[in-house]
Length: 414
Image 1 (cartoon, rainbow, N blue to C red):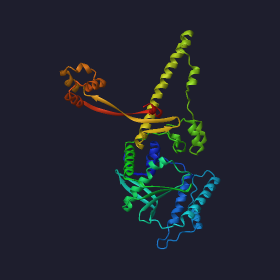
Image 2 (tube, one colour; image 1 turned 60 degrees about the vertical axis):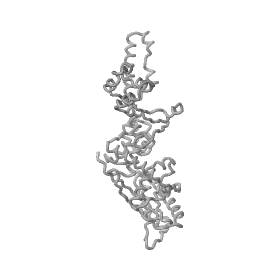
Image 3 (cartoon, rainbow, N blue to C red; image 1 turned 90 degrees about the horizontal axis):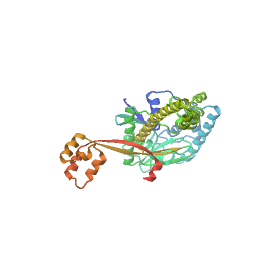
Image 4 (spheres, rainbow, N blue to C red; image 1 turned 180 degrees about the vertical axis):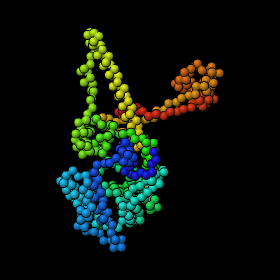
């Protein structure tokens, strides 16, 4: 498919779940209003107002004016009750009051506010909006992005996240210099996390963006199960959770589906349930033909379950491989354990070429089935001439690379 534009939000959505990206950006399915989004947008609008002052007379607004602006730009969508909305509005007033107190002494007109950018990247328009750009006292540039998360994400997430590398590239394009400081301002816990990006960081981020873009072009939209599934707007149509009563119940609690959806459940065949109705082979021999028919039926039912399980396992493995490729990782962790991923190479030889090489030398019978292990023994044999080794090496035509998954606890044994 053609891909014309991308944003950090779109890339982040794809990394979490490619199918969710498809539903949102390709199929353009509607989403439910979110009070989290409304709250964040309201706070951003108020802070934009605070810094958008007359450059010739840069007097900051008063706290009363800032809080009054919050009332005027307040978005009401997504709140389940008036009580919840009032709770968040009080929280917003508290956040802005603290922000005002902390930032008034150093108030200065920013270099830019709500700076929109468009980057030509890999044949795609990479777009976004930078909340604030400050000119530091030494002339350097600081990029600031406001966050209304309740708490800070893990440091590993902050380090690997693509938002700041994208803003770094945007600042270079807009101002001709690399920003020396990239800051995430977490307004709820009132903490700033600042960093800078090296050329290596930017190169790695560009490679990840390229991979995401290629996967989207190739229409790789397999669903990926992650901890945020119960908050997904598309949980009702997701093939991974259509009959998962636990996830559906969580989604209903989060307001993503109507409560009666949780009544849709699959008939789960547990080993305990199957054992209770199955008949052992020994008992069947004692009871005769009638019972053996039951055993045969159970046999075929179990074969069907195994086939279904294998197909499902292959599907899940592909989803995991796609996620690892997209995010450039070799291990992931779930609640029940972790998985690692490593390459496995398979070597093939051209049989006709090998026969032409080895038969005149009386060596063909040694590797008659072109067994790679036997060929390796022949290559490792000190009696084999260097010229022969080179000729055999030249017959190696195809090197297939596949990937295998393994439980992470197996690493200790390696």
